[in-house]
Length: 116
Image (cartoon, rainbow, N blue to C red; front, side, top):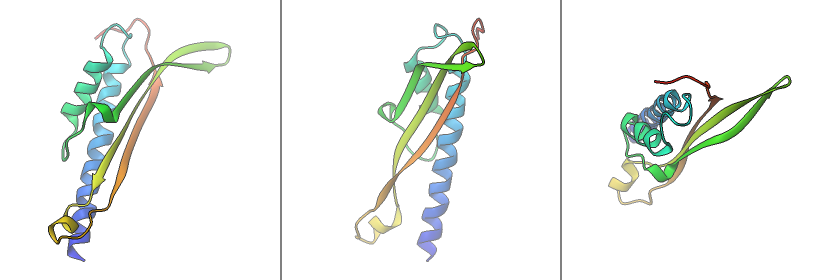
């Protein structure tokens, strides 16, 4: 029972870390596309994720979205992360180690003309 509490708490830590890191990446993506590259955004997300190692291959940056509001069209982006999480303690006891994907995503408009 105690091991379940530890695993649950750690999975919450990693989940909150992913959400925070994706929001940090969104703060860079909101600028004009020339301000930051997708690689710089992914690196920023990885640096801001704590509790587990995040890989660049788990992060998707899509800057080709268009959002229509009324008759106007606006540039938009979506950043998503899908990170596999494996329970910690069952592996200590020699049992199979079940896992699942933690996911986080942010979608927002690009502020045209905004520079860092």
